[in-house]
Length: 169
Image 1 (cartoon, helix red, strand yellow):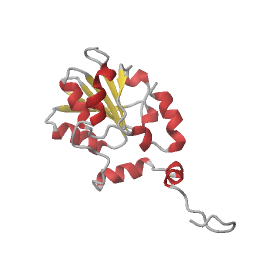
Image 2 (tube, rainbow, N blue to C red):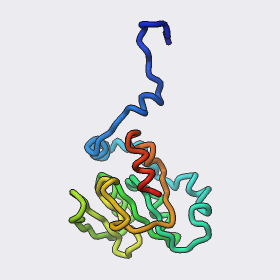
Image 3 (cartoon, helix red, strand yellow):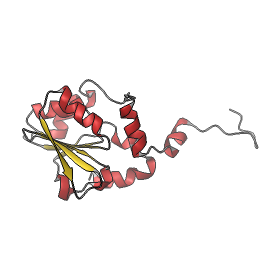
């Protein structure tokens, strides 16, 4: 790269990442086009490795999944007896989660959240909210004994990350 005065400067990948923004519509578009390279069809290696740290020998922990999509990790934890609350802006992944795992569910509107919906397993162990993360509050989704963030902080626009970290604390 030429760093002499007056020459064009190439942005590093991290600089470009810090400036990028994706709208809700952009994320929905990714799901509609099945452009979901971020999705993994297996339990995340770090979750398997550190699940005891997350659970801390507790039973029936309520675990929050920000920007959950259709993460298979949610099913794994509910199979262990825990409850899961997830949120994502696009309902495609949320519905696919239930369908791919053959989990019966109901859909309810959320009158206090703009365009908000919740998809709940009929057994009551999984609640997946379809809305903007920043429209949720503990009065709607409750409190959690743990949070599993497989990539939400990276996916959230850099200008919103501090606000998101406060929400998740």
